[in-house]
Amino acid sequence: MRFFFKLLIGFVVFFILLAAGSITSVDWTPYQEKSYYKETLGYLDTLSLSGSDQGYLLGGWARANITPDDPVPLVAYRPRGNYEFVQDSSFVKTIILGNHDFKVAFINYELLIVHPEMAKTITEAIQQKGVSIDHLYFTATHTHSGMGGTIPGPVGNFALGGWNDSLVSKIAQNTVLALKQALVGMDTVKIGFKKSHAGDFVTNRLIANDPVDPYMRQINLTQPNGKTASLLTYSAHATCLSSRFMGLSGDYPFYLSKKMEKEQDLVMFAAGAVGSHRPNAPGNDIAGIRQYAFQLDSVMTHDTSSTKPLVGHAVLAGKLPIKLREPHFRISDNWRIRPWLFDWAIGDYPAHFDLVRIGNTLFISSSGEVSGVFYDDWEKQATAMGLNLIVTTFNGGYIGYITPDKYYQEDLYEVRDMNFYGPYNGAYFQELVSGLIELGAKP
Image (tube, rainbow, N blue to C red; front, side):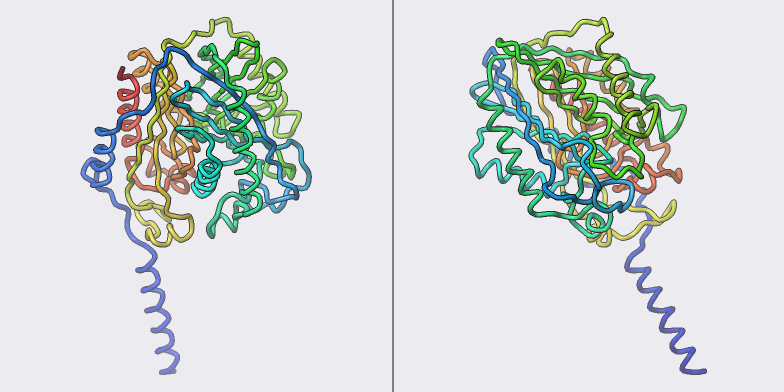
């Protein structure tokens, strides 16, 4: 009996020490008092944009197939195993805009996210091949029926297909190929901006009665030879297909782009401010997402508002590093796992904003899945400064969801499971994006 009690006490002490080493309390310190906030504001205050205005704009575009040679795991939702068939081929699409002095490449993948390690691998491949690009602007369609194999780490290995060296190498090689083809095809371009209301096709999945970002935004590019391309954003998550669907698919962005490409040479769909936003689709099978894509295309086709030509020829770009609170993956309202455990499971990667200005259209790309709830205030500010605003996500960093702070204590997926870096990030990101808009509006 004495031995049993000693053993029992030993187990209790072990689990207490284990809990003490792996669990800690939530840090509720206001973000304005934290050093990470002051450091990031310092970066913002000193950030200057690179680029030039040569009085003209050049544009070129291309695509390359990145469909795996053999089946790989599907993402996301849960571990689903390898896809059983290819419903849709997967592509990297590139649009290069600039002049003879400075060029920006918009690079888009039919993937869930652009993981930091994949972005690093691709950036290195571009540099090694001597591709003449001054700023890379990564985006993704955020399909939830796309390929895995591009997300390392324990959680990535368990649920997201892990890291497949040969697949990532293929993606990098084909990205370089698409960029080279886009460079070869560059010519002077006319660029227009259009915003179409599609509020009937998206809902707020976090809080049903909360507002949404209802607009599809696009820039349309036309070369003198008549070739055309578009970069399109929308806030609805690419989650139309059932999680039981076992085919490789780009979800509704693939079918919307394909429909539009009957009239254009290339359409790049970049996920917008998708946090909190779900698609209001008629079904969760291929027929349903085709119909949904056609409905969205019809919105743009029948939109009688004219496309506004861009004002000016400036091509400017910059990157703002974002410092964050310690990781806050919570297990209850006031308790979280310790940062070392989060970093081991998910990874410790830097976050940033990309800022690109083409004429009077400002692109801002976030490492966090920002909620479209914030968009209206940002757009009003940009419009008052004479700018069109396009916000995208999945820029080669990933820090989870950025949602309104008033919901941080709610036991909801986006604010409990996927809000990785603690309270007050809604206000923090609102302030940073507002500052970036001010910076982008400077002559």
